[in-house]
Image (cartoon, rainbow, N blue to C red; front, side, top):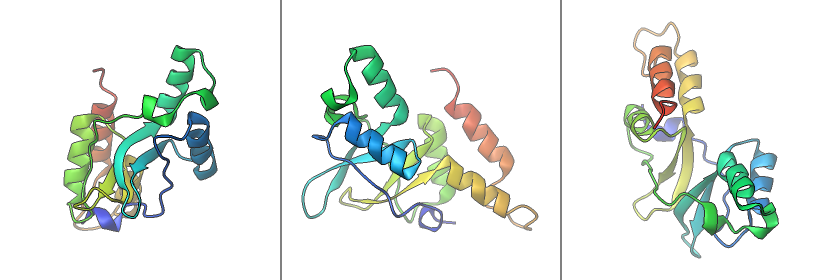
Length: 152
């Protein structure tokens, strides 16, 4: 099974010069906890990611309100990504090793194609219950979740 079969394709993004208030609005409207940060015109590429936790911790630690903080000041730049044609098992291994719940899916130019999440993998594991040959099992999902939440 390939990443493109499970990834979310309709992904909202934000830009580095937007505020954390703008990013929080995206998270609220999409009911998600992660937003890719893109830069460039025409073929924007992923330059970072921002989570709901990043937003909360920035506001708390800086003592500033969300409209006062730019996304670029808080976004994670050490990107881990995957490709649409990668095996789902490879994406899961990346999540496990990097302790991430989600990965941006990009093309060769770094342009965003979608996002794959541990929740996507878990839904597939449930869907495959009882199948003779399973791509993903609940045990694998549990192992990955435990690895993600292992203290650094």
